[in-house]
Amino acid sequence: MLYGEVTLPGDKSISHRAVMLNAISVGKAKITNILKSEDVKATIEILKSLSVKIIEKDNLLYVTGNGLMGLKKSAKPLDCKNSGTSARLLMGLLSGLPFSSTIIGDKSLSKRPMRRVVKHLEPLQANILLRQKDYLPAEILPCRLTSSEVYLDVSSAQVKSAVLLAALKAKNSTIIHELGPSRNHTELMLKYMGADIRVDGLRIQISGKHTLQAKDIKVPGDISSASFFIIACLITPDSEILIKNCGLNKTRTGILQVLDQIGAYYEIRNQRETCLETVGDLYIKYHDNLKPFIIDQSLIPLLIDEIPILTLLGTQIEGTSIIKDAKELRIKESDRIQTTCESLTKLGANIKELEDGMMIKGKTNICPNTVDTYYDHRISMMLKVAKILCEDIIIKHPNCDKISYPNFENDLNNLLK
Ligand code: S3P
Image (cartoon, rainbow, N blue to C red):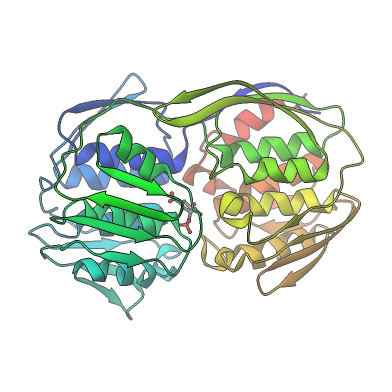
């Protein structure tokens, strides 16, 4: 069983943004609880190479801003490694500057689509060249940005954020129309740092040439990382855990709506606000007889990164659980529909792979086999939770947790009694 407390590492999305936005602000900021993972390290190293002063001291990160136009050309290509958030947000951050930059990534990132960002930066006159018009390396060429009205044709926080970061450098105001909701950490942080930004439903208006003030940021814990403990607790009899300092931003808490659907027991304690983000402690207690769930379009953007672990949950609930409208999963760090279905099927699950999701028939026993993470951190952590149910599972390429949660195994083992 799982029992006890865990304090989460910082939210990955917020960590990237805390460093990037402070890098183009005026002043000096202290960032507390920044996630120390490979993805965030990639962003930090890139900003250093663009001449931003970043100092790590006693678990804190100090960033001195260069101002909106103050980044300097890097002597080397900007290596985003596995990090889609770094690559996509940098395209907006670097557009409109008077020098060119080259963005590169690892094998997985070099297969992920980037045209979705470039096409939405083009109305602002950004000039970005992509390999085969869709992939890294990307050449960001010098240009002068103009404000525009942009209609997003995909619900993506990375695409939206790239446009917001570019719009900061245009002369007038830019209006963005979102296709559907997506995580809003960039909007909240921009507001916190004094940007002139107004959000009205799916319409966002932001003024250009408006100085950002450097701000100290306390990064809330990552609910996507919490999801592995939540599900571990729900599928292991007698478990009871408290997840401390968990980010509870409404654009991220789709998993709590799934807990409501299945009739799981949880409490939010000590809810508070930090740097405009909602934070709280999450108490979860195991009970049996959970009901199957249906996840569709209305929930997908609010829990997109949690789907591999929610699929494992589905295998442990009596009845048919359905995940649909989740095509975006096919272009994450791995094709997560395929890698989740393939690995869980090998472990005895009854899952039908759909074009845009999966249908899971539970409850099935998890059986021993050798499975692969495909170097995808969220598949790796899901499989380590599955291993609680069957310790003879062998996991190939298990080191990729470090992309988002380097200490995951340790924290999970500390909860296991
Ligand atoms: C992220 C946005 C999401 C998410 C990713 C991180 C971000 O992707 O899947 O892990 O930090 O903006 P989308 O851009 O597709 O929303």
